[in-house]
Image 1: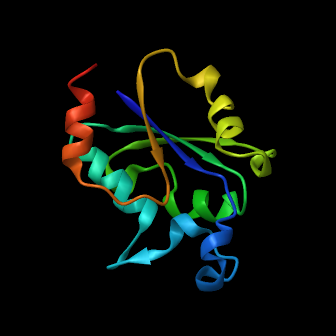
Image 2: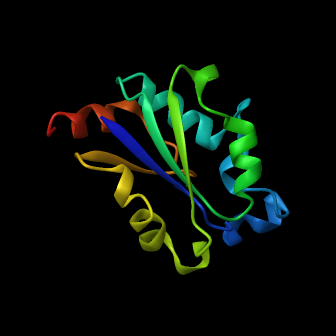
Length: 122
């Protein structure tokens, strides 16, 4: 199963802390939030990721690369309309998705048990 990670927004609510740096790359105990999500998903067998980028997307792509350092595969989808919200970002992935997938937000921290539960419905 693949996961789609939405990482296109500006992160205005956290702007005073990030000062314009992409919110998904905010560090938490040594790793960025988006890296934590990828590594958590990998623990339950998710190794294919489609990451939608927009605001400062190049920094996110440069940081994560192709995913090989995490033993996963990352495909990027650029959303120039990122200001229009998560729904538009998700629509940008439609040509890459033909099966059920896990939808993740790049700035959410969660326990792997949530993904295990969701994977039971595949």
